[in-house]
Amino acid sequence: MSSSKIGFGLLGAGLIAPFHAKAINNSSLARLIGVSDVNADRLAKMTSEFGCAGYSNLETMLENPEIQVINILTPNHLHFDAVVKAAQAGKHILVEKPPAMSLQQIDSMDAVCRSAGVKIGVVLQCRVRKPIQAMREAIQKGRFGKIFHADTYMKWFRSTEYYQSDAWRMSRRSGAGVTIQQAFHYLDLLLYLMGPAKTVHARMNNLAHPKVEIEDTLLAFLDYQNGAQGVVQASTALWPGTDLRVEINGENGTAIMVGERMETWKFKEECPEDMEIRQTGGATVATGATGPADLGFRDHQTVIEDMVEAIQTGRDPFITLASVRPTLETALAMYRSAKNQAPVQLPLTDEEVW
Ligand SMILES: NC(=O)c1ccc[n+]([C@@H]2O[C@H](COP(=O)([O-])OP(=O)(O)OC[C@H]3O[C@@H](n4cnc5c(N)ncnc54)[C@H](O)[C@@H]3O)[C@@H](O)[C@H]2O)c1
Image (cartoon, rainbow, N blue to C red; front, side):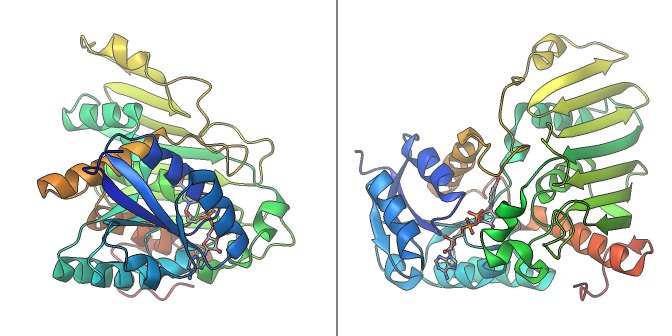
């Protein structure tokens, strides 16, 4: 084991923790030092599977000088406190999505990390996928011409048992609900590609989980600041779950990503790189459609290695808090719109939406 590897500690030993652990162990730049969880059984399972130290609380893990980065993998409403503690202990941070429950929290997290001189990145790993990078580059080069539509369709399935496995998965105040939990990734991709929205009109309901008091389905219309319009359709009610889609339609071209595969890549003016872009991704890549563990860890590894490089070079991580703020703001606006049954203008002037 090389001592030049950056040491990581995981806060939370639940569902996503093994994906982080495998991503770290698979990297030549990182090593997993320890895991912390308040649940002793989950903690024991992780420490025995990955041969790392176990801590029953964050404070003790923060005392280990070998740990330079803390990955925050707790339920969504607990991210804020953990970020503040880790930053004040001088640790760099990777926080799972959504990074926080309010814009005020995001702004405070940013301020605390800046004053502590530590880096903070957000785990929105879908941004690193090749089709998304190809779409972004084509948008920046103006290849689509005027963009008319940017949409996402997430027709997924989660069982009632998934929701009932932990109280936080059934509580909107804890950050559950298809909008802020699963669809957050794909709303983030739309805004990453298109820039901010100016109006949101959303409808939410619960189609298939009557024992769970949160929305399992979101339908929303977006007007982007750049003049395009879009649809977000997201559900965990649609058995068995099919690969998500991100679609961009402009006057001069159309791009459609399905799962991780570039299904359509067609422009009025062909470029030399287009043949290769059409081969991107594989039909069999698991992207979470049928169950929460239906995932690979490669994109997490990219995010982890990006953090290592950010630490070593002094640059910002690839996915900054500031870049995720519009995603949280738009998700919050969707909740307000659904509650008031009316469109909501952005930016939000106050964020009391729950
Ligand atoms: N990037 C992705 O694709 C992806 C996928 C799944 C989950 N996530 C995110 O990861 C986070 C965790 O989700 P999950 O599905 O693993 O949840 P989970 O409920 O399975 O795991 C959370 C763990 O945190 C532990 N925990 C709670 N309070 C704690 C505390 N104070 N100190 C230490 N541990 C504590 C719980 O005991 C539990 O083991 C969420 O933010 C979620 O949105 C991201």
